[in-house]
Amino acid sequence: TVLHLDAAGALYRRGSHGFVLVEMLASDTKTCFVMPGTVAIAPRAFVRHAAIRDVVLPEGLRRIGASAFRGCRALAHVRFPTTLEVVQDEAFYESGLRNLHLSSAFVEAGKNAFLTHGTNRNTEPPSLCDVRVDAGCARYYLASGLLCERGADGRSRALLYVGPETDVVVPHEVDRIA
Image (cartoon, rainbow, N blue to C red; front, side, top):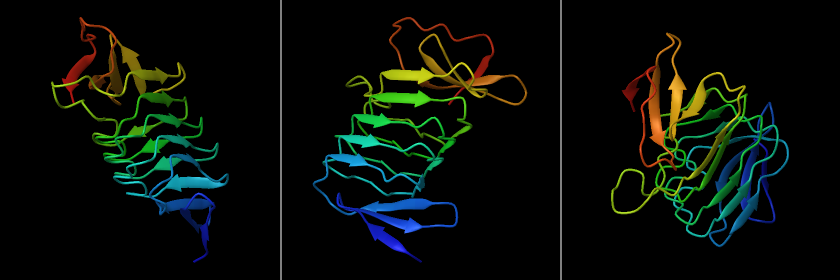
């Protein structure tokens, strides 16, 4: 196994298809430019990292692991690449993520992948408020302030309220709320 530690304190493992960011070791890093050639962010790589505010993910990155940014309350902005395909369970759970862009390549959001800070409490608004989904994204779409997922059977489920509508009309094809 070949490991690489970059100047910002990110530890990478070289895999057969590219690098995997294993863990952010530097606790004071505020901005992380993930190394080109990285294809995945490992589960729990940034978990509860108190200082991280901005992350730039490179083109070629395909997967964000489970709980990768869980509890990163200072995290505000992530630049999502057009190559991102999968975000696993609770990847951004209780993080401060404000923006999300799902490209046409995106195919899978794990359970509670985008349940950010404030989403499951009524005491403050959710941090995630700027969500875009490319028209070519076959599985995910926005409707009436809801991020929805299409099922293979043509029915859909609402994953998350992302606003800004104050009155939400659940689309007729949505038969489940996650």
